[in-house]
Amino acid sequence: MDPSRKPHNQDISCISRREDCLREQQRIRDLELSEARYQNLFEAVADALISVDRGGQINRSNSACEQVFGWELKSLFGTALSTLFQADPEVEQAYQKALQGTGQVLELPFVWPSGKLVTLALQLSAIFDGEDISGVLVMAHDLTNEKARELERSQLHEKIQTSHQQLEEKAQALEATQLQLQQAMAKQEKANAELREIGRIKSDFIGVASHELRTPLTFLF
Image 1: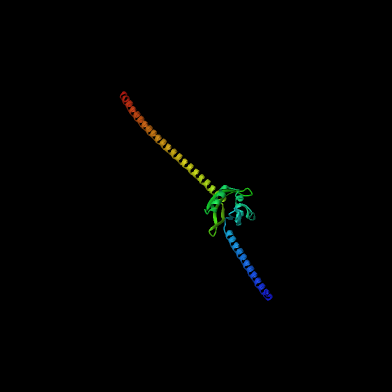
Image 2: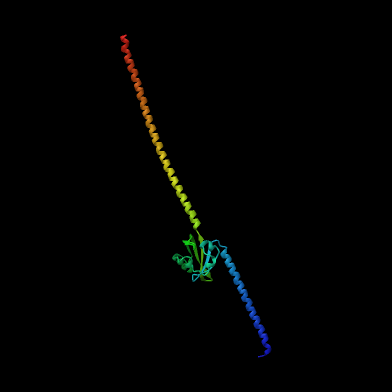
Protein backbone atom coordinates (compact mmCIF):
# COMPACT_ATOMS: atom_id res chain seq x y z
CA MET A 1 0.00 0.00 0.00
CA ASP A 2 1.21 3.49 -0.80
CA PRO A 3 1.67 5.36 2.52
CA SER A 4 0.93 8.60 0.73
CA ARG A 5 -2.62 7.41 0.11
CA LYS A 6 -3.52 6.79 3.75
CA PRO A 7 -4.09 10.38 4.88
CA HIS A 8 -6.29 10.98 1.91
CA ASN A 9 -8.40 7.93 2.75
CA GLN A 10 -8.59 9.07 6.35
CA ASP A 11 -9.79 12.47 5.22
CA ILE A 12 -12.49 10.84 3.10
CA SER A 13 -13.49 8.65 6.05
CA CYS A 14 -13.69 11.64 8.39
CA ILE A 15 -15.76 13.60 5.89
CA SER A 16 -18.09 10.61 5.45
CA ARG A 17 -18.52 10.23 9.21
CA ARG A 18 -19.12 13.96 9.57
CA GLU A 19 -21.80 13.84 6.87
CA ASP A 20 -23.39 10.83 8.56
CA CYS A 21 -23.32 12.69 11.86
CA LEU A 22 -24.88 15.77 10.29
CA ARG A 23 -27.60 13.67 8.69
CA GLU A 24 -28.29 11.94 12.01
CA GLN A 25 -28.47 15.31 13.76
CA GLN A 26 -30.85 16.60 11.12
CA ARG A 27 -32.97 13.47 11.46
CA ILE A 28 -33.11 13.98 15.24
CA ARG A 29 -34.09 17.64 14.79
CA ASP A 30 -36.80 16.61 12.33
CA LEU A 31 -38.08 14.03 14.80
CA GLU A 32 -38.07 16.57 17.62
CA LEU A 33 -39.90 19.08 15.43
CA SER A 34 -42.45 16.45 14.41
CA GLU A 35 -42.82 15.43 18.06
CA ALA A 36 -43.40 19.06 19.09
CA ARG A 37 -45.98 19.56 16.36
CA TYR A 38 -47.74 16.33 17.33
CA GLN A 39 -47.81 17.35 21.00
CA ASN A 40 -49.09 20.81 20.06
CA LEU A 41 -51.96 19.13 18.25
CA PHE A 42 -52.70 17.17 21.42
CA GLU A 43 -52.63 20.30 23.54
CA ALA A 44 -54.89 22.19 21.13
CA VAL A 45 -57.75 19.82 21.99
CA ALA A 46 -59.85 20.87 24.99
CA ASP A 47 -60.81 17.29 25.86
CA ALA A 48 -58.41 14.76 27.34
CA LEU A 49 -56.38 12.81 24.77
CA ILE A 50 -54.26 9.73 25.38
CA SER A 51 -52.40 7.63 22.85
CA VAL A 52 -52.16 3.92 23.65
CA ASP A 53 -49.82 1.52 21.88
CA ARG A 54 -50.73 -1.99 20.81
CA GLY A 55 -49.47 -3.31 24.13
CA GLY A 56 -52.02 -1.25 26.01
CA GLN A 57 -49.50 1.27 27.40
CA ILE A 58 -50.12 5.03 27.36
CA ASN A 59 -47.33 6.73 25.41
CA ARG A 60 -48.75 10.24 25.03
CA SER A 61 -51.27 12.50 26.76
CA ASN A 62 -52.25 16.16 26.93
CA SER A 63 -52.57 18.46 29.94
CA ALA A 64 -56.39 18.22 29.90
CA CYS A 65 -56.01 14.68 31.25
CA GLU A 66 -55.29 16.09 34.71
CA GLN A 67 -58.70 17.83 34.79
CA VAL A 68 -60.55 14.86 33.31
CA PHE A 69 -58.86 11.84 34.93
CA GLY A 70 -57.45 13.48 38.07
CA TRP A 71 -54.00 11.96 37.36
CA GLU A 72 -50.75 13.90 37.22
CA LEU A 73 -49.60 14.13 33.63
CA LYS A 74 -46.20 12.55 34.34
CA SER A 75 -47.92 9.58 35.99
CA LEU A 76 -49.84 8.67 32.86
CA PHE A 77 -46.82 7.99 30.63
CA GLY A 78 -46.16 4.26 30.58
CA THR A 79 -49.29 3.47 32.58
CA ALA A 80 -51.46 0.65 31.29
CA LEU A 81 -54.89 1.62 29.99
CA SER A 82 -56.36 -1.10 32.20
CA THR A 83 -54.78 0.56 35.26
CA LEU A 84 -56.23 3.95 34.38
CA PHE A 85 -59.73 2.51 33.99
CA GLN A 86 -59.37 -0.06 36.78
CA ALA A 87 -59.63 -3.02 34.38
CA ASP A 88 -63.10 -2.01 33.25
CA PRO A 89 -64.14 -4.80 30.84
CA GLU A 90 -66.19 -2.39 28.73
CA VAL A 91 -63.14 -0.21 28.11
CA GLU A 92 -60.95 -3.23 27.36
CA GLN A 93 -63.49 -4.55 24.86
CA ALA A 94 -63.74 -1.14 23.18
CA TYR A 95 -59.93 -0.92 23.01
CA GLN A 96 -59.68 -4.32 21.30
CA LYS A 97 -62.34 -3.35 18.76
CA ALA A 98 -60.58 -0.05 18.08
CA LEU A 99 -57.36 -1.99 17.39
CA GLN A 100 -59.33 -3.79 14.69
CA GLY A 101 -60.29 -0.46 13.13
CA THR A 102 -63.79 -0.15 14.58
CA GLY A 103 -64.36 3.16 16.40
CA GLN A 104 -66.10 2.98 19.77
CA VAL A 105 -68.11 5.44 21.90
CA LEU A 106 -68.71 4.83 25.61
CA GLU A 107 -70.27 6.60 28.59
CA LEU A 108 -69.22 5.34 31.99
CA PRO A 109 -68.55 6.35 35.61
CA PHE A 110 -64.92 7.03 36.52
CA VAL A 111 -63.29 7.33 39.94
CA TRP A 112 -60.37 9.73 40.41
CA PRO A 113 -57.42 8.68 42.58
CA SER A 114 -58.82 11.13 45.15
CA GLY A 115 -62.12 9.22 45.19
CA LYS A 116 -64.09 11.82 43.24
CA LEU A 117 -66.75 10.22 41.03
CA VAL A 118 -67.31 11.66 37.55
CA THR A 119 -69.07 10.59 34.37
CA LEU A 120 -66.95 10.36 31.22
CA ALA A 121 -67.75 10.09 27.53
CA LEU A 122 -65.02 8.14 25.70
CA GLN A 123 -64.29 7.89 22.00
CA LEU A 124 -61.74 5.29 20.91
CA SER A 125 -60.34 5.21 17.38
CA ALA A 126 -57.46 3.47 15.66
CA ILE A 127 -54.13 5.21 15.02
CA PHE A 128 -52.85 4.32 11.56
CA ASP A 129 -49.19 4.15 10.59
CA GLY A 130 -49.52 3.81 6.86
CA GLU A 131 -51.86 0.88 6.37
CA ASP A 132 -51.07 -0.65 9.76
CA ILE A 133 -52.74 0.18 13.08
CA SER A 134 -50.09 1.22 15.59
CA GLY A 135 -52.34 1.98 18.53
CA VAL A 136 -55.53 3.59 19.78
CA LEU A 137 -56.41 7.22 20.42
CA VAL A 138 -58.73 7.78 23.37
CA MET A 139 -60.61 11.07 23.70
CA ALA A 140 -62.37 11.67 27.02
CA HIS A 141 -64.91 14.35 27.93
CA ASP A 142 -66.17 15.02 31.46
CA LEU A 143 -69.98 14.88 31.43
CA THR A 144 -70.43 15.42 35.18
CA ASN A 145 -71.57 19.05 35.02
CA GLU A 146 -73.70 18.40 31.96
CA LYS A 147 -75.36 15.47 33.73
CA ALA A 148 -75.97 17.65 36.79
CA ARG A 149 -77.56 20.36 34.65
CA GLU A 150 -79.61 17.73 32.83
CA LEU A 151 -80.83 16.40 36.19
CA GLU A 152 -81.71 19.93 37.31
CA ARG A 153 -83.62 20.53 34.09
CA SER A 154 -85.41 17.21 34.53
CA GLN A 155 -86.33 18.03 38.12
CA LEU A 156 -87.47 21.53 37.13
CA HIS A 157 -89.54 20.08 34.29
CA GLU A 158 -91.08 17.60 36.72
CA LYS A 159 -91.90 20.42 39.16
CA ILE A 160 -93.47 22.46 36.36
CA GLN A 161 -95.48 19.45 35.25
CA THR A 162 -96.62 18.84 38.86
CA SER A 163 -97.56 22.51 39.30
CA HIS A 164 -99.41 22.47 35.98
CA GLN A 165 -101.30 19.35 37.04
CA GLN A 166 -102.15 20.93 40.39
CA LEU A 167 -103.39 24.07 38.62
CA GLU A 168 -105.54 21.96 36.32
CA GLU A 169 -106.97 20.08 39.29
CA LYS A 170 -107.71 23.40 41.05
CA ALA A 171 -109.29 24.77 37.88
CA GLN A 172 -111.46 21.66 37.58
CA ALA A 173 -112.43 21.94 41.25
CA LEU A 174 -113.28 25.62 40.72
CA GLU A 175 -115.40 24.77 37.69
CA ALA A 176 -117.18 22.09 39.72
CA THR A 177 -117.78 24.61 42.54
CA GLN A 178 -119.07 27.19 40.07
CA LEU A 179 -121.40 24.57 38.57
CA GLN A 180 -122.67 23.63 42.03
CA LEU A 181 -123.18 27.31 42.85
CA GLN A 182 -125.08 27.85 39.60
CA GLN A 183 -127.25 24.83 40.36
CA ALA A 184 -127.85 26.10 43.91
CA MET A 185 -128.73 29.55 42.60
CA ALA A 186 -131.10 27.99 40.07
CA LYS A 187 -132.78 26.01 42.87
CA GLN A 188 -132.96 29.13 45.02
CA GLU A 189 -134.47 31.10 42.15
CA LYS A 190 -137.04 28.36 41.64
CA ALA A 191 -137.83 28.35 45.35
CA ASN A 192 -138.16 32.15 45.32
CA ALA A 193 -140.49 31.94 42.35
CA GLU A 194 -142.59 29.33 44.16
CA LEU A 195 -142.64 31.53 47.28
CA ARG A 196 -143.73 34.52 45.21
CA GLU A 197 -146.47 32.41 43.65
CA ILE A 198 -147.59 31.20 47.06
CA GLY A 199 -147.55 34.81 48.30
CA ARG A 200 -149.65 35.90 45.32
CA ILE A 201 -152.13 33.09 45.89
CA LYS A 202 -152.27 33.93 49.58
CA SER A 203 -152.89 37.59 48.82
CA ASP A 204 -155.61 36.72 46.33
CA PHE A 205 -157.23 34.39 48.87
CA ILE A 206 -157.17 37.03 51.58
CA GLY A 207 -158.60 39.60 49.18
CA VAL A 208 -161.43 37.28 48.13
CA ALA A 209 -162.08 36.23 51.72
CA SER A 210 -162.22 39.84 52.88
CA HIS A 211 -164.69 40.71 50.15
CA GLU A 212 -166.90 37.76 50.99
CA LEU A 213 -166.88 38.68 54.67
CA ARG A 214 -167.67 42.33 54.04
CA THR A 215 -170.76 41.55 51.90
CA PRO A 216 -172.88 39.79 54.67
CA LEU A 217 -171.88 42.40 57.19
CA THR A 218 -173.16 45.09 54.87
CA PHE A 219 -176.63 43.50 54.88
CA LEU A 220 -176.64 43.34 58.69
CA PHE A 221 -176.23 47.05 59.03
